Structures are given as C-alpha cells and as structure tokens.
Amino acid sequence: STFDNIYTAVAEASSGFAKPQGLIYGYGTAGFRLKANLLASVVFRVGLLAAVRSKKLNGQTIGVMITASHNPEEDNGVKLVDPQGEMLEGSWEAYATLLANAQTDTELVEALKKVVATTKTDMGIKANVIFAKDTRSSGPSLVAALQAGLTAMSSEYKDYEILTTPQLHYLVRCINTAGTPAEYGAPTELGYYEKLGKAFRTLMDGKTRPSAVFVDCANGVGAPKLRNLRRIVGEDILDVRIINDDIETPSKLNSQCGADFVKTNQKLPPGSHIAPQDRCASLDGDADRVVYYYLDQDSTFHLLDGDKIASLAAMFIQDLVKSAGLEEEIKVGVVQTAYANGASTVYLQKVLGVPVTCTPTGVKHLHHAAQRYDVGVYFEANGHGTVLFSPTSLSIIEAAKPQSPAQHTALQSLRALSDLINQTVGDALSDLLMVEAILAHKGWGPKEWDGAYTDLPNRLVRVVVKDRHAFTTTDAERRLVSPAGIQDRVDALVAKYKGGRAFVRASGTEDAVRVYAEAGTRSEADELACKVAGLLSDY
Ligand code: G16
Image (cartoon, rainbow, N blue to C red; front, side):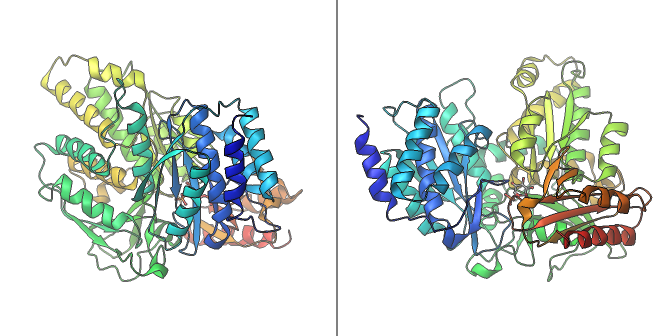
C-alpha cells in the first residue's frame, strides 16, 4: 500500500525497543503499569496507537501521560487521553494490548495493520499527539521510546515535559476545543493556573482568607505545580504550606507519605507537625488524588477521604442549585465504587436525597456513569474524582436570569465552580481549591465538615497472591466469581459481624489483591479484613 514506508519505519524503529520474552502486558485500571525497566517496548507501541487513534479521530489531538501515579519510584506507566480529556475509550484498550504483546517486529507490524483495518482508520490523515511525564527518573528514557514510535508514524507531537496527569488532560481538551463554542481554556500550563485562579477568586469574593492548609505532595510533581498554582492564584487568598516536596531524591516518591499512604494506613505521614484542627491534605505522585485529614483536640487522627469530598461537593452544589431556583431543571447525582464507606452512601441517599450509582474501580468507569447526571459528582474513596456539569446544565446556568441578589450570587458561584473543577478527570489541585472554597463559604473547619456523617470503621488490606488474575468479580466488584467457592466463604465470615461488609478484588495497578472490610467497631473491621485476607492464601 501507499503506507508501506510507515510500516517499514515502524519495523525498523521497533527493533530498538524489543519486547521482553515471556511477558504478557495488560491494560489495567489506569493503563499499563509495571517496573519501569519493562516498559520501553510498551511505550513505543503506545506511541503507535496514539497516532492511529488521532488519525481515526480526524487528527484531533491525543494525549499520552507517562506516570505510575501512587506506585513506587521504580515503577512507571503509560496511559492515553482521548480528545475531550477523557481516558482512552474502553474498546481501544484491546488494541493497546494487542500491540503491546506482539513479540517480533514483524508481528508488531501485522498487529498494527490489523488495528488500522479493524478501526477503518485512514492512514493518510496527519496525527497529533501531546505528552508529558511525572518526576520519575525513568521518565526521560520512556519519553524517548514514545518519540520513536510517534516519529515512525510520522505523527506531529509536542512534549509538555513535566506535568501533573490532570494538567495533561486539561491541555488535550483545550487544544481540541480551541476556536469552538466549547473552548475549554488556554492550552498552556499557565492557562491552567489562570483559569483555576480566576474561578477561585470569584468564589472567594468577599470571604476572608482561610487559615493555612498543609499539603503533603508525596515528593512528586504536585509540589512544584502547587507552588506555581499558589503564585498565580495569589497568596492573599490562598495560604498553602507545602510539605514532602523533595523531587530530587527518587526513593522518596510516595514513600511514607502521599494520599495512598494516608488513606491505607489511616494515619499522618511520619514527620508531620500539625496542630489540632489544622486542615491537612495529601496528594499522590501525579496529583490526581487528594485526601484531607486533621487531628482533633485529643490528637486523634480523622480522615476526610474521597467519600467525604464527594459528600461535601454534592451538598454544596445541591444548595447552590436550589438557591439559584434551578432545582427542577438540574439534578445532582453521585457515583462511587464498592470502596465507598457505607455511611457515606446512606448520607447521600437519605440525608441529601441524591441518587448514587456504584461502578467498578477506575476513573474511566466512574466518569462515564457521572456523565449520565445533570451534575455528576464522582469520587473514589482513595480521593480520585471530580464533578461533571453536563452541557445542558451549563447552558441552563449560563442562560438563567436571576430574580434576586441571592439567585445572582448562587448562579455566579455555580459558573465559577464549573470552571474551577477540572471537567476532564480527577485533579488534586482543582479539588483542593474546590474544598477550600466550599469550606470558606460554609465557614467550616475540618470538624464541621466531618460532622456530616460518621464513617463506619473500615480496613483495606493488600495481599500478595500467587496469581491475582485468578480473582474475577461481578456486581461492580462487590462479589467474586472465581476462584470457585471463595465468595461463599467470604459471605460466611461477613455474616458473623453485625453491620459487616467485605469484598475482594484484584488490583489493576499492583501485583496484589485488595480486601476491604467494614464493621461496627475498629477491631471488628480489622478482624474481618484479616480473616478474609487469610482465606486468600488457599488460592
Ligand atoms: C489508579 C486509578 C484509580 C484507582 C487506583 C487503584 O489510581 O486511576 O481509579 O482507584 O489506581 O486501582 P487498583 O485498586 O485497581 O490498583 P492512580 O492514582 O494510581 O492513577
């Protein structure tokens, strides 16, 4: 064909990024994630697929992010971003896997031709791809592999260097909407800060500057980027104290700090010096997750996780919609996963009266479910989430004519919120500003926020098993299908605990199985989690 030169270039370039023998790669919860030294061939091939995806979508810009987020420094990963800043369309994950697992250069070219044919892609269209990486030391060499793949495909590309994952998602959407009525913002890192800063200032108009918020940046990319954000937002309205910002010592990334550490261990990162009632937050290694926490007067630790953030956001937005007189037209809904604390679901449904949907783990699942609501709040308990305003509700808010000063203020706040909140993906920096703005509006400290409902005691355990792929689930990951017989044993354990709940699922980002348990008391939750984990050694 006329594109033989491309296929020849791919085969030649591919020989520099040979696939290790015997490995089978899978597209997990958030793309490919492995030890960094096993990833070069995968990233090269993701470059090929990004170019095909862009061609298929008429040359719209596709994003590639090189990060392993909450995982340790020696890991890395790669994920693809679709034109509106969403995660890669699910049906294309199979093509990514097909390319990643082709053993030889010849097989790779065959696989590539197959993807092109199956997706009916016109190879004559120019591809456009942008990419960025987090602070990991393996980033630059993986970028080289990506560039080689893009070059072989004669794709246009732009390297945005070091960014948070959500910043790359933002840029992709900005580029693809430029010059259209849905224009999302200026396609630069500065444009991102300015958009958030402007919206935050509008929301904080007339409010006194909140007390300091202490932010643990997991020794990752969040640290320099939060510093940039603080500068552009203005320290007169945002007092952020940055901790765990050492991005020069690779081993420190996500180690004994960060959102995953705090959520899993339910304790402060060691070395935190905070006073009772101080607001604290932890980001993860690519700044797409955030959790809050504080110490009460007795120095007891209290976590304000993704469920608490979702509840706060749903409550505030629902109130604003009512104050704006739009409650008949705009309905708020919430999306959670099985990890959501049972008390949060009850609060949302019974106290706020909002519908709640449960999906499998992974922002890609929650995002799509949230798009079915007028305003869809979605958060994983681990702090990964955002709020989506549907195009229709945005037009309603835009067009609404206020009948009173109160309605005027509510509408203005809703508009600013929709700009403040990253509409493409969960974004720790944007979520942080959202929480700060809501607390300022309510005049709340962390204790008042925490008072909405009391978490059921819970425990999350990570168990290393022989073959995590043996664990398959159904019912939004709440029940195991295989290994055969195991779910009955889990059920029998759960039945022994009043208010008990537990489930088991394989991680899609780590080589392990996760066990989650809830029960009436802390010790019962620990015991139930431990007993369920104990079952796994038999499989
Ligand atoms: C990723 C996903 C999240 C998911 C988390 C854990 O987070 O983006 O949606 O909750 O992994 O997934 P699993 O339990 O399958 O390992 P991150 O922050 O690592 O990108």
